[in-house]
Image (tube, rainbow, N blue to C red):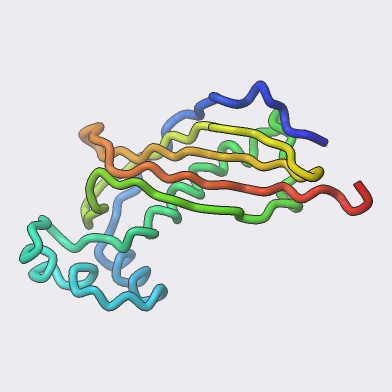
Amino acid sequence: MALDQSFVGRSYPPTDPYEVGREKIREFAEAVRDANPAYVDPEAAKALGHSDVIAPPTFVFAITFKAAGQVIEDPQLGLDYSRVVHGDQKFAYTRPVRAGDRLTVTSTIEAIKSLAGNDILDIRGEVHDEAGEHVVTAWTKLVSRAAEGA
């Protein structure tokens, strides 16, 4: 079943704040095997002009994809998540994510397209700190595969 095109432009409420911790940043940097000292050493980060350790660029995916869950779980949209694969991801930063940040995400459906029986859903996640300042925009592309035989 095709996704409801009237959802394009729909925004969902901001998430509760997510507090970015040094340990979460360290764990993520280790998981992606990025040895940049600014991710684990506060002094190295300060030498680069940051107030604390910073997160690798893809760190925010964990919170933006969770926020996109509001879209994915919206029963009126009609998305069958069992048929979804992750199609693409990109980020545009105003500044790096830092330890101590309290971030919220507002998700908006930017586009819904059909291609060869597949539905393609583009979700934009706007990430702001607790002062309301923009930190990063994340775009997530999800592909809902057509049912076999469709």
